[in-house]
Image (cartoon, rainbow over all chains, first blue to last red; front, top):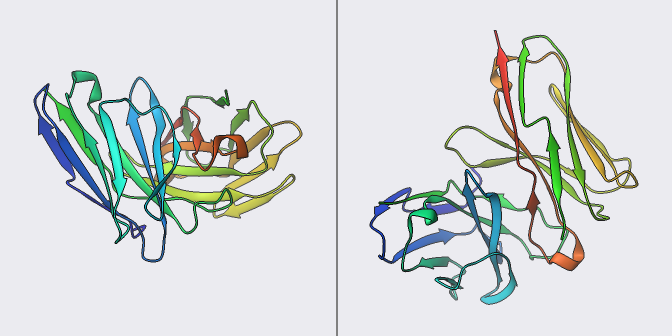
Length: 114
Length: 112
């Protein structure tokens, strides 16, 4: 158990819908990262927040957005869902978000879009 | 664009045998990570390699980093069934911020 929690574990929804994934980092960690894992794209970085501020952005679609709240938990919002958005979404956290900080991964949320 | 390549992508081996997984990356980096993932599960951190020549060992797994060759290896000694999983290497470099760029993963199956 890494100490990073994610809810829900599974999410099944329909195309065109909107969902919110939630992540709580390890106690003391200030930085949160979101990754998407799919069969065709592998593991891809989406976005990083550090202490409430966006720090880095990856291959995140415009239909996706995220934020980090004052209590440091983070939410990833996915809208206008398409079949191709079906994937495992991981949240990771690290202490300061600097380069030399190890990232610890949560259990993931499996999203299925029908 | 930073590329991270692993090979082989699939490895089937007998218990008791040795083998090596290779991880090549395209840009200079002095920080490389190895993760393990069981089917449908999260990523478990195995090794963090901090500098050129770094070597770390845990049980039957040993990882090394050669930053000049842009190569890391994960060596498996006397494999056992419990090592069956997918192994990922990941790299981060300064110009990409803090994100990790992952290899495609190596699926390891150890047969009894």
